[in-house]
Length: 286
Length: 286
Image (cartoon, rainbow over the protein chains, first blue to last red):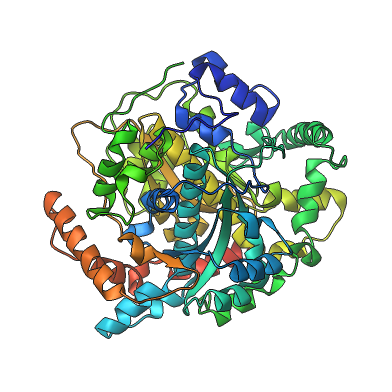
C-alpha cells in the first residue's frame, strides 16, 4: 500500500488561501489566516474535470477502494437504493460513448462506472415476502434512490482524486436512459443516474480548476434573498471570462452559458423525453 | 490554521484493512496488501451519522470552507443549479425540527445547512434577457438541480468530517417541502433537497460505522445480474444483526428494515404528497 501524493494538489494548511483563490478568483469573507483546513479539503477544492487519460493501467484494488468509499456515503435509512455497474467490455463502452454524443473518454478511461438508482432490490425483497410494492411508485422513492446514487458517486469521485486520478461525470447517459438500461440489462425500477470516467490524467493535456459563483451567490442566511445578485453575477461573468481566456476558449460570460444550457427545450439535448423514458423503466412519479 | 486530527479515524495506509473490515465485516475480494490508500479514503470510509453535538462552538471560517468544498463539487455544465441556506435563527431551526418529526439535533447543531435545488437563478437570467423558460419545466432540469445539490452536500459532509466534525443528513425536510419552502422564502423553481446538521460530536455519545451490503450486492460487471443475491443478502442480514446487537438495538435483519422503509405508501412517512408539493413549487415534471 502506498500513500500517493498527487501532483498539483495543495498539500499544506498554508496553501488554503491559494486553493480558495483558484476556486473563486476573489477573496472570501473570512480572513484566510483563520480558516480550518485538512488534507481532504485540498483534494475537494482541487477538483477539475479530467477527460484525457493516459494508457497506464490503474493500481490493483482501485475499483474495490472506490466502491468502499462510495458505499460509505450516507444512504437514506440505510436502504442503499443504488447499484454500480463497472463497464469493462470495449464494445459496450463504445455504445455508451455513442449515446453520450461521442465522448471518447468513456472508451479510454481506466474505469467506467455507472451509478444506478435502484429500487429493484426492494422490489425483489417485497416479492419474496409477498408484500405490496406500491410505495416504490412515488416520486419520493425515485428521489431517495437518485440521491443515494449521487452521494455514492461523489464519494467515488473524491476517492479517485485523492489517489491522484482524474475523473469526469457523464450526465449524457441520460440522453437515452432507455437505451442505457437495455445495454446494461437494468431491471425495472432502476435507471442510470450518471456515469463516471476515471483514469490517470494524461500529463500532456492541461486541466484547471474552474471558477464558481462567488460565495454570496450561493449562500443565504436563514431565508433566501436575491439582494446583491446582479453584482455577484457580474463578478461571476468576469471570473469566467478570465478563466476562458486562459484556456483559449471563446469569450462567453457565465450567465449566458448557464442560461443557454437550460432555458429552452432544445437546450436539453434530447433529454426532454427523460420523464417518459423513466416511466417505461418503472418510475411512475406518483 | 491547524490540521485537525479527528479521533477514531484510520490515519495510516496500514489501517486500510481495518477500515474495510469495519465497513463490511467480511473480506473484500482483493488482497488488502494491494490496496491503494489515502488520508481522504480514511475520512470517507470512517463516515458515521452523528446526531449528538457538544455545545462547543465551531472554528471561525468553518462555514466558508465547507461552502468552498461544496461549490468545488462538479456541476452539470457548470450551471450551479443549487443554493445553500444556512439556518441560524433558533426559532426557524425549531420549526424545521418540528417538520422533520422532532429531530432535536437540528436545533443543537453548530451549523444547519439546507441544500436547495435551484432553477430560479436561471429563471431570473431568462427574465432579464426576455427569453423562454420552458426548458425548466422538464424532469431533466429537476434532476440536474437535485444532483447538483446532492454532489455539493456530499462534499460539505466530507469536508466537515475531515475537520473532525460530525454530521447527519436530514431527508425529513421533505416531509413537508411546501412548509420548508415557505419558511426559508424559497422562490418558485426551487426546493429543499436535504438538510445537513453539523457539529462537534458529543464525546459521551458513541456512534459507529454502519455495515453496508457486501460489495457483490452493489457491484455488477458490464451488465446487471442478480446471481448470488440471496447469499449476499443473508450475509448483509448477519452483519446488520451483529452491528445492532453491539449497539443495543433490536434484532431486525437488514432486509426487513430496507423493505419496511419503502414498500408501502405508509412507509413514506407522509412524503407520498411530495410530487404534488413539488408541482406547486414550480416543478411540473414534464
